Image 1 (tube, rainbow, N blue to C red):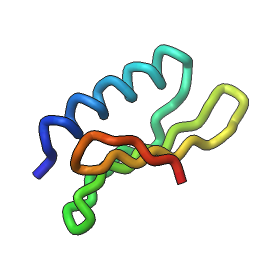
Image 2 (image 1 turned 90 degrees about the vertical axis):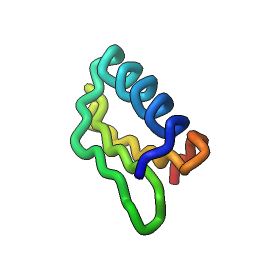
Image 3 (image 1 turned 45 degrees about the horizontal axis):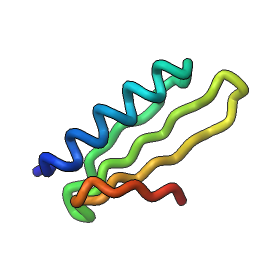
Length: 61
């Protein structure tokens, strides 16, 4: 189950991405690793990978 911290962070990140005209291509919760994974593409076709851990902290691989 997604934590409150993950939920809040993922909404904020998603809003920021779409406000800056990025397209969210994938939004996935991995139940085994307890992470949210977001893959977005910028208007310049650059890929952004964002991982949100169970504490709501960001990690970009």
